[in-house]
Image 1 (tube, rainbow, N blue to C red):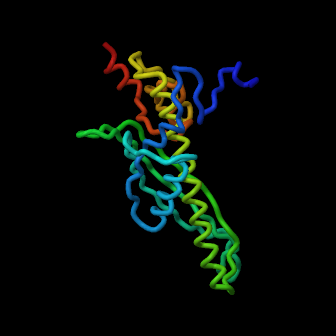
Image 2 (cartoon, rainbow, N blue to C red; image 1 turned 135 degrees about the vertical axis):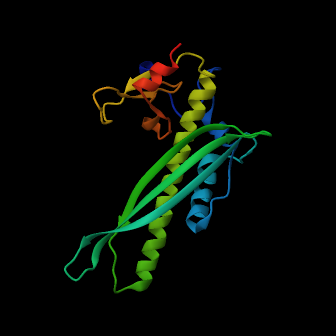
Image 3 (cartoon, rainbow, N blue to C red; image 1 turned 45 degrees about the vertical axis):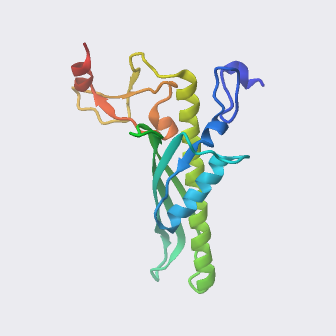
Length: 213
């Protein structure tokens, strides 16, 4: 309750007539098929997270996701064995409208890490560790994607289309060449795209000057 006075609002909730219930809106998202067994595990997790506490009605949006997980061997021993297996999960998502000519509404990227200590002398335990680690990675990616989509739905539907001039800020983490800086635009919710995993193009100073009236 104390955070409400600071402008914070619950993501999965409805406050007032101008606010959108992200939980109900997520139920309208259809998760398209994702290839590979890892993709199917992630799709099931996405469907579970977006359905929430009730039956889904996927009639408003289509979510397309490409995901993968890669193993990395760390803690290399003198006998060339590894004492730690690290998993890096990556997923790129795109949200489309449901209509005769679907429109790309939002897109983003999710990344997560996991791992376990392998035991090369127990093959069954090793296989089980692989499967459970991959399942955790897929579920973590699904949770991050669900949260990113919910943030976009909450902000863009509640605020409506942003018809003002896009606000921009200088990305100080980009390499500067002394003549032009790298700028990024803020979305209608006022957050940089990288803060929520969404993707937006970056523009150089010269590109921005060319677009000015």
